[in-house]
Image (cartoon, rainbow over all chains, first blue to last red; front, top):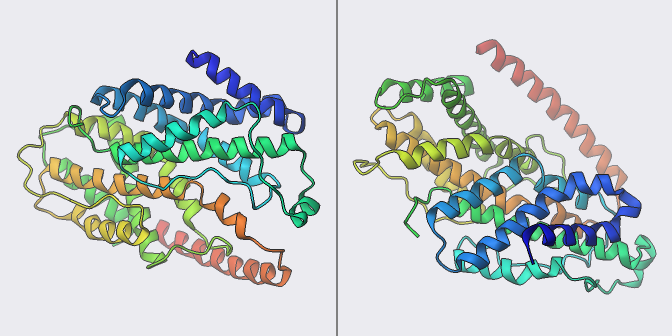
Length: 170
Length: 190
């Protein structure tokens, strides 16, 4: 799937589950940048495998840096923080690491979840069901957003661990 | 030494060695912002001590605030990184090694060890820049490892304790008054 097509598909999945409540424009402003950079990062990791060239690392680091600086990642994080959500969500996780192979492995494992049409939702306890009253779509939106944020976190760790890397040293 | 004095001293030390021209307006600005944010981070680590402030309590200049500050300097960090990578650093004698780690106490120990080196008089400009880049690296690791902190901490939150919230608000008001007093004092000194 081409990068643009993939970005649009992911965005549509978010919009399908969450646009009713939040509005499409709001999602466009808050999620599009993070989805685009996350998709670029996926291409980078699949294309260059275990030994990416230094100038390619530079280029993706600049993209991740812009995603962190101009908003993108943090707007997405603020959005999830503001949502009423059950404690049993957040099933996406990774062993936080600064090692490239571990970063790559976790990213490639989690990214395809963003594209899942029917994302598995967590089993809510009866207490959670009573206090949150969320639809399946809303739960899917929360899960997908959580997945996107874990991917952003991995990207930020990649940026940090390559910050002082010189071209050609990898 | 006040924050302003620290920033000005490090800038002056960079300018003393004429080998590289930091006087271009953009570059000087990138350098100033990076030093300023690095000094702020140093102050936060000193204030926090061995553990990060509890997310459930309002603390002025908490981890979220500091993550926001680091994020605001991202562009300047990356601009300086471009310069850093172009420089010939093969003659550098002083190095600033640390084992990259997401453990707060490891980050803190390395940062507090390296930060005073920024004002060491005997560093070459490339060594000083190397030191500054190491400090930026530690800040970026801190940013990455705290990116989801607030979201994850909300998982374990119980029902709202109104008495606790009132107490926290009271403490917060006192802290804000104290920080405003400190800001006024720093401005007067600058």
